[in-house]
Image 1 (cartoon, helix red, strand yellow):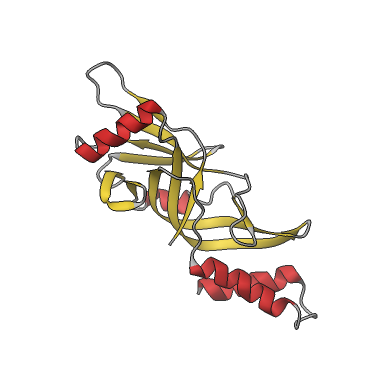
Image 2 (cartoon, rainbow, N blue to C red):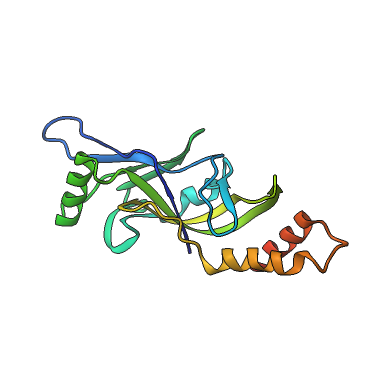
Amino acid sequence: MERRTSTLDLELRAAGDDAPPVIFGYAAVFNQLSEDLGGFRERIAPGAFTKALGDDVRALFNHDPNIVLGRTRAKTLRISEDQKGLAIEIDPPDTPAAASLIESLRRGDISQMSFGFQTVEDQWDLIDGAMIRTLLDVRLFDVSPVTYPAYPQTEAALRSLDEFRKHSEPAKDMGDLARMKMLTMQASV
């Protein structure tokens, strides 16, 4: 599983003083480059989450499966794609962990989101000397408000890039992009 963090603001809303809070935000934004992820940068194509919208996705805090904030199956997490990215709404539970998170959101101590996923389809391009990975289709596991923005990478992502580099010199008959596509397809099988 891979995780990506965005620096988008989260918002806490309530309909009235007695209404329970709802967490709103974006777990991912389309067509924006990530930070360097260890030799490559990444962007998310519009529609990358379309197939995952019907999946049973969890909202966690810091990707911790012990702190469940919502779940699509329980209708306490709603996810959708719009022109900006992957929008989320969470109805947090009445638990000490959720109350602590809500207070941290109110104070502005926590203001970022992340998503956990598995790549179904991606595309690699060499643009101005930089490797750019575009996520085209992903399996979504969780969305999470997070304490620290980080771009942890899975071994598979590194292995794909390492394989590209390892094989880029000997196979002169193939272009870099064709080689990367072939290696990406092999890594995702």
